[in-house]
Amino acid sequence: MLTETILNTFKSKKDFVKYLNNNITEFPHYGNALEKYNYEQELLPLQAELVDFQRWVQKENKKIAIIFEGRDASGKGGTIKRFKEHLNPRAMRIVALNKPTEVEKNQWYFNRYIKELPNAGEIVFFDRSWYNRAVVEPVMGFCSKEQYNRFMIQVPEFENMLYESGTRIIKFWFSVSKEEQQRRFDKRLNNPLKKWKFSPVDEKGQELWDDFTNYKNQMFSRTHNSFSPWVIIKSNDKKLARLESIKYVLSLFDYENKGSNCKTILPDPNIVQRYFRNTIQIDQ
Image (cartoon, rainbow, N blue to C red; front, side, top):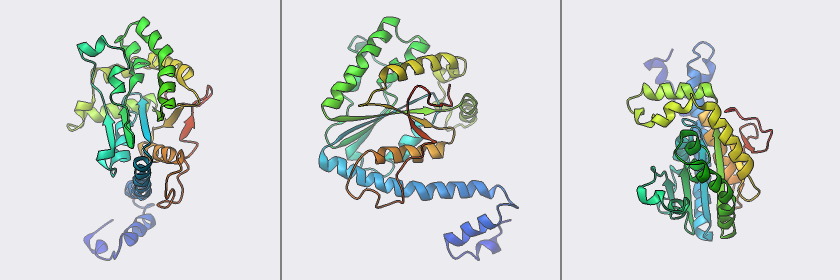
């Protein structure tokens, strides 16, 4: 058991970590502290890599759009937070749009997203994107069948035009199990600082689980392609999902000083997988 006397014997962080490791059998709860420590030790070098990556994006006038999709409480927001934590805010943005206005409802569906796309030298993180119309909207009855079908025909063409104009699109789907989603919902409702995260759509998430699965699978099969593939992130473990999604993005580009801050930026194939029809997902 940690006491003041024991704490005073530590001369460095290394001594403290060694103590926790040596006593984890007797005090299993030390494992939580060690897990967080190890996570942060891996996260910080990756964030330093992201800083180098952003400098390269600015220097080379690259346009990077990273889309975060997934069921509610799948870990999208927390991952975006770790991506942008140490980046230059002048060369990155987070886009999380509210429901469309009356004017926007009568525009071409992609209009409201076009103005949010990255400029040269910029990274834009989409906390949900135009793919609302592929899954959430049809499940919740927020769009008509005709609007849905039109979107599914147009979206590959839309993304192909972006690709041809020099915008790189990275599409993540955060895959969380039904049981883990419910656990996170319960945790939100019991936390006065996170209650705002729980919405009427969240409330329907468990009830309409199979409908979400059906539309999600249609989305994958019809919008996965070589120039903007879907990448599945298994996110029951939030920390691993954050680390591995950062690695995936870094692994795609040959930026200056690549790999100078950490040992490896190759993502774990057990956590990160490109979509294909027999990809094992945990949110089926």
